[in-house]
Image (cartoon, rainbow, N blue to C red; front, side):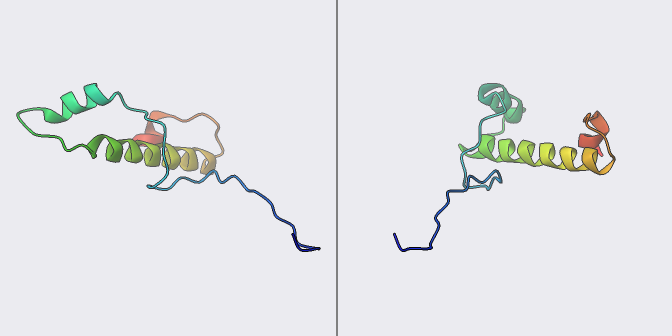
Length: 79
């Protein structure tokens, strides 16, 4: 290692669509609900929905913080 150079390992907390996210949905129940009246569900649909839920959570957190609150309310998610 060269003198004067520092190397640091920084753990990022941002998530991208390529990173592995913990599954927040119950796959079988979600797939069952999506099938509804005879629809088929592709293999990556549950992952896409999980990504959308993460996005909703992020938006709710931002809205809550912008309003000076620490409690997320239903209207932070729905509106």
